[in-house]
Each structure stands twice: as structure tokens, then as C-alpha cells.
Length: 260
Image (cartoon, rainbow, N blue to C red; front, side, top):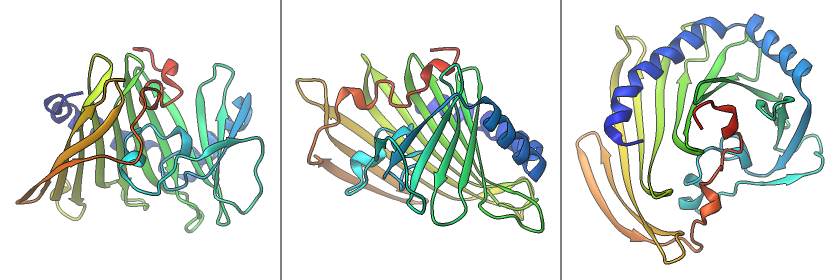
């Protein structure tokens, strides 16, 4: 997805996220999602490590851990010990991911997935009941086309009954000949106390990717924008190149989206 397409798409996706928030920001919806997950889980997979990433080894973003030193995606394991940060992935009979459960020393975190066309939505509830009510903390939106992740979007919610979004964080991926050539990371902050949630902060990074003879991404450069400040960074090469299988079906669930 190129940047101009994203600018056109973001208002629609944000509005849909607000609709989801208004409909499911309550304990009744949490209970319905939870019971549906219990009834429809056909099998499970487990991942240890990768706790810094959204969904661990199934994180839709194939680039974030590569550019961040010491960040690992984790690995699949046969079973889990309680009290350890790890992921439990719930799949239905169609091999669709329907829930990601974060197993930790605090109350488990649940993110429930559902699909609309070529978009996977994820609803993550907070870890604790507040006055007997369960609030949504995050809403995730992943757009997939031709078996590739084109956009990975996070909506941060207030975590209360306000049904408002306070921040969006987006990663956009543009490809040429099935190889990523540029990536944009954009963050917008909104003041929920002002009418319409006026944007009060903005930052963006535009990455240019460079490949080697094997078609692997071996280095990148980027330009950073933060409000009125702009800074350009020279090419940098992480210790290991980004292999092709990193972005080819990285999400693992592309067949759940109808336009693949």
C-alpha cells in the first residue's frame, strides 16, 4: 500500500474501529467472544518469547523486530509453563486464528480476532475488571492482499467507557516484484477532550529498503518527521539480512482473508 492510499483509507478504518469499540466495549461482549473461542477452538499452538511484539511469532509486522536490536519473534513450543510470558494461539476448524492469549504472571490478556474481507480485526481487552466492567484496550487492523501484509494498524483506546481512540500507530508496506521496497511508520495522537478528537501530535518515518543479489533485504535508510522537525539517516545494515520468508505469509493466516 502506498502512502496516498493509506491517507484515503485511514478515516474509514478509524470510523470502523470506533464502531467496533462502541459495540464491544463491555463485559457482555468479552464473555461472548470468550465463550465463542472456547466452543470453536479446534487446536492450539504455543510460543515462548517474542513478548515485546504484538502476537509474538505471529506478529504481522515482519520489519519491526529486524530493525530493533535484541527483539526476537519467539519460537513455537509444545507446551507452556504457567507464570511465564508466552502466547497461546487458538485456531478453529478452518485454520483461522480466532484468539491470542498472553499467558503471564498477571491475569491473562485476550485478543479476539474476526475477519472482514481482506482485513483481520483484533480486539484486546484490559487485564482487569473495573467496577464489574471489561474495557477494550486496543483494536488491531491488519490488511492483507496477494498473500502479503500491506498494512498493520493499531488503535489505542482510552480503556474506559468513553469509546474513544487516543492514538493510532500504522505500518505501511509497499512491494515491487514481491519484495518490500519501502515502509512507512506513522503515529498520530488525538485529544479526546476536544470535539472530534483533534490530532495534537504526529510523527512519521519513511524507510527505503535495499536488497542483495539473493533478493534479501540487507539494509535500509530512513527520514524521520516529528511535528516540524525532519532528519535524514544514512543506510544501516543489521547483523543479518531479512530473508524472503520473513514477509511471505509472515502472518500465517492470509487464507482467512477473501482477497488473497
